[in-house]
Image (cartoon, rainbow, N blue to C red; front, side):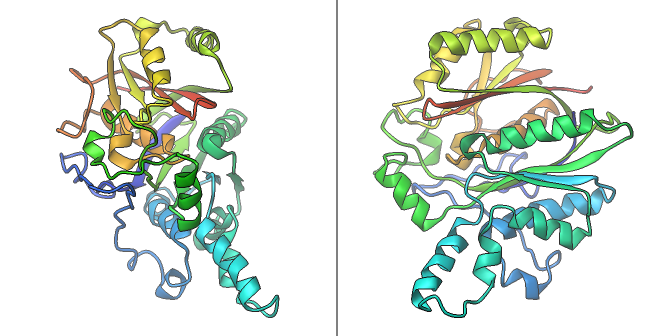
Amino acid sequence: MYLKDVYSISPQVTHTDEFINGNYKIYSKNILSVIEPSYSEMIPASLLRRMGKAVRMGIGAALPLIERHEKLNGIVIGTANGGLENCINFLNQIIEYDEGVLTPTHFVQSTPNALAGQLALMSKNTGYNVTHVNGPLAFENAILDAMMFLEGATNKTALLLGAVEEISNYNYNIDLIAGRYKSDYIDNNKLITSQTKGSICGEGSTMFIVSNDANNALAKLINLKQINYPNEIDLEYLLNQFLFENDLKTEDIDLLILGNNGDVQFDSWYTLLKSFFSSKKEYVYYKNFVGEYRTSSAFALYFATQLLKGRIHHKGIEGDVSSIPKIILIYNQFEGIHHSFILVQSVV
């Protein structure tokens, strides 16, 4: 599967070239909200004022791609929570109106597939339309769906593939109580080395045009693998099996993109993974840019495409990148339960 185009809205200025040219936003708080572009030129005001944040971010990241690639055969979205804030507003409205006549806006915007449906309506796309709501592996399942769709196509085929996650006050408070986020403020540029419990909360929307056609591709997504509840032996076996299935060895991987999030409870998984490779293996992190959220691997894939093209060189990169990589392995896990590998390759 080839990545033809990408657009990302994140806590960094990724919707322009500022991020890849060295602009690294440092936040002294535990919630990293996205820096949104101006939507006024792409979304009619009558629609924009009724959109929840997740739908707004998703459409804002998708429409520029749809305008550049009009002949799309479908839309595949991954999200863990969808428009949760609107969902809570809708439930509160039921109580407030005593189950009477409710306004439809919060209900329409609250379902996880609201983004994919709205995109289909706005772009008049009547093709394949699916939203995957698989928690921390939602984006990985969306990738798998897109790969299967493209493999089964007999002609040149293209899909919009992406992920979106918003920070909901309701969900943030639950996750904070559960210990998923740090209780003390920490700068995001100190996140990876913080070594305390919890991480910092992020959000974002990243969209891709994917195709079975290699012409003008940014990168090739070779394959992905996911596993739940592995032990240390399982993880090593899965990695070796995954590489073997794709005719690769550990020494063939030029760069690791790791999902370390500064949580001392679970970052040991990344230390374990690095131990399966040579001590000289190059690696970088990405959650210091965008924080922790369940579909952050979509941003990692955006990050990988930029690194493969040699577009990112600045102080915000933590780790070791001495040259432009050819093959990148993305590894992310959530609370030691949900793990995924994504292999990406240069097409140059």
